[in-house]
Image (tube, rainbow, N blue to C red; front, side, top):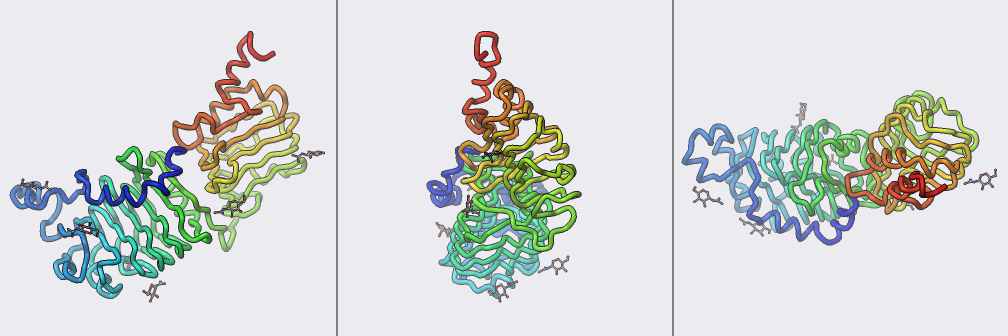
Length: 371
Ligand SMILES: *[C@@H]1O[C@H](CO)[C@@H](O)[C@H](O)[C@H]1NC(C)=O
Ligand SMILES: *[C@@H]1O[C@H](CO)[C@@H](O)[C@H](O)[C@H]1NC(C)=O
Ligand SMILES: *[C@@H]1O[C@H](CO)[C@@H](O)[C@H](O)[C@H]1NC(C)=O
Ligand SMILES: *[C@@H]1O[C@H](CO)[C@@H](O)[C@H](O)[C@H]1NC(C)=O
Ligand SMILES: *[C@@H]1O[C@H](CO)[C@@H](O)[C@H](O)[C@H]1NC(C)=O
Ligand SMILES: *[C@@H]1O[C@H](CO)[C@@H](O)[C@H](O)[C@H]1NC(C)=O
């Protein structure tokens, strides 16, 4: 969502502190003293022995962490004042497979979070996971983590190159706070990238109301038939730009479903976009690059994509059409259709055809406007 772009600068840390100590308690842990009074609720929500009410993990509190529970209910918070070694944490978290509540690890010097390698699920009604501002962190390494929910923030870890969440399958991500995105994976190492699988799951758009990615998708080390780095016959996921010029073998895009890069069509002889018959998503996480750039295609009269349902872009404009067939200026239906696929609802200027917005184009089409 365009409005959330600047949040990482202005909001993330102050917001976290607010959220962490705020009145809004959406966690599944409920109120411990209430739980003890109402035994029915106790059962329904969680075993009170497995509630770690303190949340802040320090050398003092770690002794009371419910080590034997496979499901723990807590707002786990670890920071630079915790003074705990990876070995101590590993021992505390040895049996924890499900964390109900939240997980915040901030300003620590850990290289990885392998002390949480057994964790499979983070269940959160609201907050979720925040791993931010850890100067030594190189990868998360939560190798058994399969499901996450709530918010997912991994930001400002200057050495972080990979998430390393190879088992991640489900993400029910959402933010209940209007000014806070549901997902932010940004301002990590310049070499940071998401694997295709991680990107697909974190971008599961039907469940997310907003995200901020100043990241990229890793080029697959061993490209396969389905996952390619240059257009190839049979490829479904292309990581890299798709550049189409005067000569292009369109058989190479017939099976393409997901493009992690820009779609650039210049000087081609295309008359429409029926060649992109299976293309569903275009994801361009680099805010300096257009997601779709279509120029100087003198025969191009329709910009309707058969199946495109989503375009992720952090660029100011995102989608640009220029100097194509003159009739394309009047194709406001394609314009709206593309714009509806861009990020969220606040995307008025995210799609331009010869500097016109979709509304301008629609006016042109009216009898007295334009020609
Ligand atoms: C928890 O419940 C007890 C008893 O109902 C109440 O006195 C207390 O204020 C509650 N604490 C919070 C943080 O809601
Ligand atoms: C937990 O740590 C945070 C940050 O240091 C602090 O603001 C908060 O007061 C601590 N909470 C408790 C219960 O110690
Ligand atoms: C995680 O970091 C520890 C040092 O804290 C290191 O010994 C271990 O090898 C690392 N694990 C992986 C998988 O890199
Ligand atoms: C991760 O899951 C695998 C397969 O279920 C299991 O063998 C392994 O012990 C788990 N890792 C940890 C650190 O618990
Ligand atoms: C298109 O091709 C013409 C000549 O064939 C060239 O002059 C022009 O620069 C090309 N435009 C683009 C955008 O590549
Ligand atoms: C974004 O693209 C520009 C070139 O347009 C490149 O210099 C920069 O490194 C890219 N950023 C990332 C995070 O890949």
